[in-house]
Image (cartoon, rainbow over all chains, first blue to last red):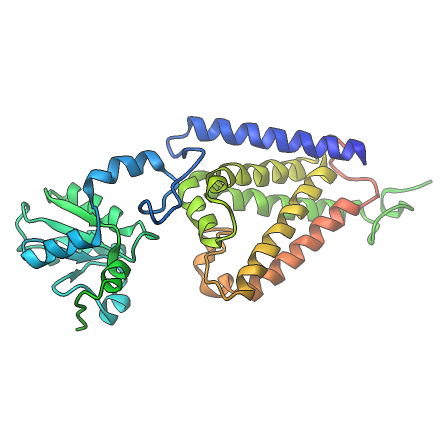
Length: 164
Length: 159
């Protein structure tokens, strides 16, 4: 029994050492502690990336509403079509993340590259709006922001919702 | 003379080749399951968060270390290196997974199992009943290897 426990300990020690080493060396490695508090922001394992994103995020729902009221920005809903149909921010175009790359040029053909674009998904538990924003920036859109509170944040405040 | 297939102290079966088959099957499965998680620890961490069972400070650490425990113990079973120790580790993990899945199934919490990540996109495979049944079967395999008392085939280091 005692030798068995020692052997288990050996395997576990090997696994832990290997894990920390690979995580440290790998480009996909993550910090030892992540950001899992929705009060603070979007939940993510990668806090380094989160810090980088901070300046591209709409800080709160009220700011998003002000931008909405100004009518200057285009809201892009990256959730699945069924969820979009059930209710979305008025005027938002549907560009589900899954086929965003294929449909982007067609849907945003008339949108000037300078026009502010605000992506959103299902709030602070989803990362799709960030991924979408990154793709849009890559395609040359110059003013892309992420509305991290997304549709749940919008409805919680009783802001208008459109259904097709 | 005691032959390989008739060892008096064997477990519920008496054949070292059955033990080898179970070791390779369980070991291979865990090596396979660990791959996606190792490739993308951030996505795996999100899945662990989705279970809603662990303290925030532990989530990343679990995401980093757990796949390597699966990999190491899986490889150990494949290679016949400390097979009993590896089987005990994997059985303990399976027991933990089963409890985690069962808790969330009981409280009606919708979550992504994340067990094999890619394969789990098939919806019925993400059904708690299927996951629990599969885990029970794998657990049975793990215990069978752990409690096997006969001589093992293709073993590098015993125990």
